[in-house]
Amino acid sequence: MDILQIFKTLAALATAATGLLAFIKPDAVYGFTGLEANGVRGISEIRSIFGGLFIGLGIAPFFLGSAGYRMLGIAYLAIAVARIFSIVIDKSYAQSNWISLGIEIVLGLILIIK
Image (cartoon, rainbow, N blue to C red; front, side):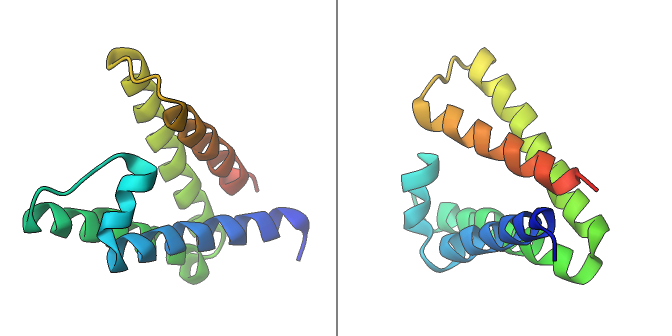
Protein backbone atom coordinates (compact mmCIF):
# COMPACT_ATOMS: atom_id res chain seq x y z
CA MET A 1 0.00 0.00 0.00
CA ASP A 2 1.48 3.35 -1.03
CA ILE A 3 1.43 6.50 1.11
CA LEU A 4 -1.43 8.10 -0.86
CA GLN A 5 -3.61 5.04 -0.28
CA ILE A 6 -2.77 5.17 3.43
CA PHE A 7 -3.88 8.84 3.55
CA LYS A 8 -7.08 8.00 1.67
CA THR A 9 -7.83 5.16 4.08
CA LEU A 10 -7.16 7.41 7.07
CA ALA A 11 -9.43 10.12 5.62
CA ALA A 12 -12.27 7.62 5.15
CA LEU A 13 -11.79 6.21 8.66
CA ALA A 14 -11.69 9.71 10.16
CA THR A 15 -14.93 10.56 8.35
CA ALA A 16 -16.63 7.43 9.69
CA ALA A 17 -15.23 8.06 13.19
CA THR A 18 -16.59 11.62 13.15
CA GLY A 19 -19.96 10.23 12.17
CA LEU A 20 -19.83 7.58 14.87
CA LEU A 21 -19.05 10.21 17.50
CA ALA A 22 -21.97 12.36 16.34
CA PHE A 23 -24.25 9.33 16.28
CA ILE A 24 -23.34 8.10 19.76
CA LYS A 25 -22.81 11.47 21.46
CA PRO A 26 -24.67 14.17 19.50
CA ASP A 27 -23.88 16.86 22.08
CA ALA A 28 -20.17 16.47 21.20
CA VAL A 29 -20.89 18.00 17.78
CA TYR A 30 -21.07 21.45 19.36
CA GLY A 31 -17.34 21.35 20.08
CA PHE A 32 -16.35 21.08 16.42
CA THR A 33 -19.30 22.67 14.61
CA GLY A 34 -20.85 25.18 16.98
CA LEU A 35 -24.23 23.53 16.42
CA GLU A 36 -26.45 22.86 19.38
CA ALA A 37 -29.67 20.86 19.34
CA ASN A 38 -32.64 22.61 20.95
CA GLY A 39 -34.70 19.49 21.44
CA VAL A 40 -35.15 15.92 20.34
CA ARG A 41 -35.77 16.88 16.70
CA GLY A 42 -32.40 18.63 16.56
CA ILE A 43 -30.73 15.63 18.16
CA SER A 44 -32.29 13.42 15.47
CA GLU A 45 -30.83 15.66 12.77
CA ILE A 46 -27.36 15.56 14.33
CA ARG A 47 -27.50 11.76 14.68
CA SER A 48 -28.79 11.27 11.13
CA ILE A 49 -26.82 13.88 9.14
CA PHE A 50 -23.58 14.26 11.07
CA GLY A 51 -23.82 10.70 12.31
CA GLY A 52 -25.41 8.42 9.74
CA LEU A 53 -24.38 10.32 6.63
CA PHE A 54 -20.76 10.68 7.73
CA ILE A 55 -20.60 7.02 8.72
CA GLY A 56 -21.97 6.07 5.30
CA LEU A 57 -19.61 8.42 3.46
CA GLY A 58 -16.66 7.11 5.46
CA ILE A 59 -17.32 3.41 4.91
CA ALA A 60 -18.45 3.68 1.26
CA PRO A 61 -14.88 3.57 -0.12
CA PHE A 62 -14.32 0.18 1.55
CA PHE A 63 -17.21 -1.20 -0.52
CA LEU A 64 -16.80 0.85 -3.70
CA GLY A 65 -13.02 1.10 -3.99
CA SER A 66 -11.47 3.99 -5.88
CA ALA A 67 -14.84 5.38 -6.99
CA GLY A 68 -15.88 5.56 -3.34
CA TYR A 69 -12.75 7.50 -2.41
CA ARG A 70 -13.39 9.96 -5.25
CA MET A 71 -17.02 10.32 -4.18
CA LEU A 72 -15.90 11.13 -0.63
CA GLY A 73 -13.37 13.63 -1.99
CA ILE A 74 -16.04 15.34 -4.08
CA ALA A 75 -18.26 15.52 -0.99
CA TYR A 76 -15.47 17.21 0.99
CA LEU A 77 -14.80 19.68 -1.83
CA ALA A 78 -18.52 20.47 -2.11
CA ILE A 79 -18.60 21.13 1.63
CA ALA A 80 -15.56 23.40 1.19
CA VAL A 81 -17.27 25.38 -1.58
CA ALA A 82 -20.36 25.84 0.59
CA ARG A 83 -18.15 26.88 3.52
CA ILE A 84 -16.32 29.47 1.38
CA PHE A 85 -19.69 30.85 0.34
CA SER A 86 -20.73 31.06 3.99
CA ILE A 87 -17.46 32.66 5.08
CA VAL A 88 -17.92 35.41 2.48
CA ILE A 89 -21.70 35.91 2.51
CA ASP A 90 -22.27 35.36 6.24
CA LYS A 91 -18.98 36.97 7.26
CA SER A 92 -18.26 33.88 9.32
CA TYR A 93 -14.55 34.44 9.90
CA ALA A 94 -14.14 32.25 13.00
CA GLN A 95 -10.77 30.52 13.18
CA SER A 96 -12.49 27.13 13.44
CA ASN A 97 -14.24 27.83 10.13
CA TRP A 98 -10.90 28.44 8.40
CA ILE A 99 -9.45 25.29 9.97
CA SER A 100 -12.44 23.25 8.79
CA LEU A 101 -12.07 24.73 5.31
CA GLY A 102 -8.41 23.76 5.17
CA ILE A 103 -9.14 20.22 6.33
CA GLU A 104 -11.94 19.83 3.79
CA ILE A 105 -9.79 21.04 0.90
CA VAL A 106 -6.82 18.87 1.86
CA LEU A 107 -8.93 15.74 2.40
CA GLY A 108 -10.93 16.42 -0.76
CA LEU A 109 -7.81 16.74 -2.89
CA ILE A 110 -6.15 13.67 -1.36
CA LEU A 111 -9.28 11.62 -1.98
CA ILE A 112 -9.78 12.59 -5.63
CA ILE A 113 -6.15 12.03 -6.68
CA LYS A 114 -5.86 8.79 -8.64
